[in-house]
Length: 459
Image (cartoon, rainbow, N blue to C red; front, side, top):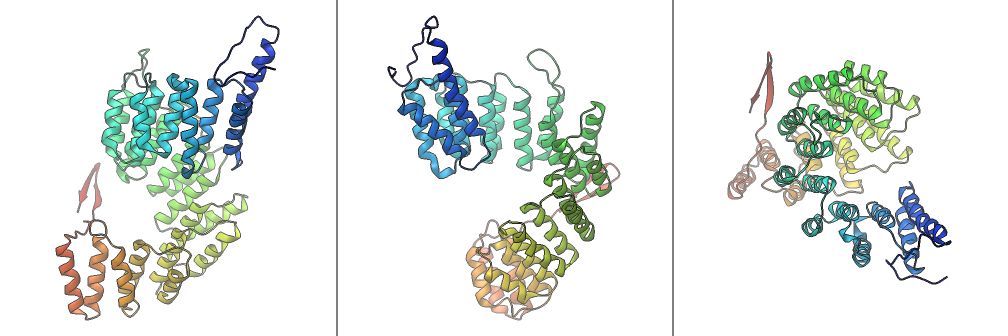
């Protein structure tokens, strides 16, 4: 058979071999798609190897093979950017860069890995669709640049439900919950191109419920109205939507309601169980969190990293040292490598219960370098139990090398207090002068006080 140059497709549809040629042509894209969609960690490379074989065997490419190859790049580690750039160059050579779907898929991969390059590519795209704009909104959200994300949202010639969902999620993910709720209200009275009212989907409601759970009693009112919307529209309480409701009610402290919704769900996964455990832990219900954890294990659900973080936090809040030790050992028994947050929980648990020697041993023996949060927890425990000898000069010197004036004002104040309480006035004065010189500011605490239907913020 005569080989054709790459990117050139010459098919005479009246030729008797045309059906065979099209079958071979589509089967490659089908194979790349299957490889890219596989759950194996090596599947992205298998998809790209198939794409490379097409190149070597001079098999004509179509946009589908390029799209599925690009999809596989999203699963590659970030240090494999050279593969993405080679694929980009090949797409340019094939002339597919003007194809809006291929260009948008390429934009999505760059936005996930190198956002600066995604911005350049967006500016060069001759044609854009709604998905193109949505990718940029999500990309700017990941960068924390919500102002630019909103500018892109406002500049969109047409918006679909995914556009509204992306912008709402951008606000919620960056703790701008009031803005997210306001935009959600605006969306509810907006209309699409056909003149029909926009109706939120489960993705939109999931983002909003996540924000409601972080707003306390203010978010609870809004979260209940969303729950009512779900009931009114007779939506099925599937795993995704049910888990969002469980998480929202649990974070707001309504554990009975959270448990009731959990029991009404047709099926549960580890995320739903973890939401219950973390909600109980957050509000100090240590024994209840342990009972939920044991029920989860009896149901045959395997805990994940976040589940163990939740149960260890419950042990910290309730001062359950023996249980904390047991669950910490269980992490490796479940085939999970303990993360720094798990070690941090153990330092907090030992420190708050006065076992400062064990807390210090955890810090020195864990496979991670202790960060300022862990050291701050240890120093707070030293202050709480008046064991100032544990916070010696070596420990404080380590902490002082980590702190930054703009973020760790509380740690500076804590070290100064330790020096004062241990009678080291000259050292305390030195820290105070350093705070003045570096313009260190301690973050002001704030709380919400509910009075009737009004919620007031106090600092």
